[in-house]
Length: 275
Picture 1 (cartoon, rainbow, N blue to C red):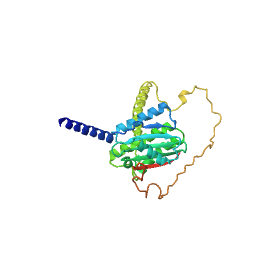
Picture 2: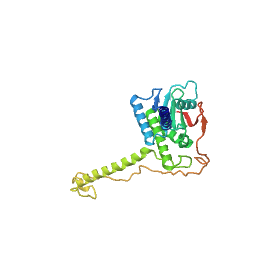
Picture 3: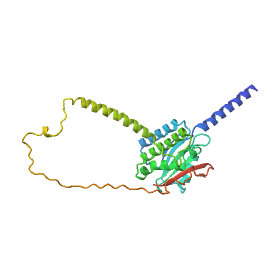
Picture 4: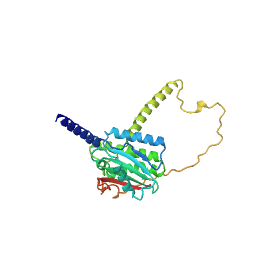
């Protein structure tokens, strides 16, 4: 009887471990699947490293993935993105939370698909923000930069959600990308170095005295003005456009995320288009 109790306890413990593991970690560790072969090996490895860093930074709560393909086997790009996410073990927690970007090079279409709490974090308006970040790079063929921007923007929206307790949505000021802070720090640091260098150079020029005009630098008798006149050469015209109010922009738009169901039965949010 004691042996059976020990076996039962072991089974319960193993079951608990498995359940906890499913709830906190995604089955698929490949965050970049470049089936269309549009990235170099180094670009793929660097992107994978960056994405994993963002995921770890936010406690492995939201998955971030990229899939490229050449053709979707007759499926629409939306169904392809949803099914690839669902049937390949992506998503963290019991709700499989996360986001994936699918790119079909044959049809030149892309799809962002969200799942679980990712539907809340990445609103329709938030997906537009991500799209604005990567689409121009994708259209111009700068694929590595496009996917880096996608991951960076996704990380920015996760950070916004965690720090504000609500998702970036209609009527909210656009969040600054995380690298904006790095730029500000670099600018300040560079300014300090530049100021220090300039001050050192200034101290070396103490023997130079200020001159009010250039006469002291002209050799006597070497310059003679024989004729002078005023000539009108240019005219500068400044025009200021007066903006008029309109009903455009985000006014009248509803927030949140629109959803649909994939073939697995899960709910997904998403946004897609052509590039």
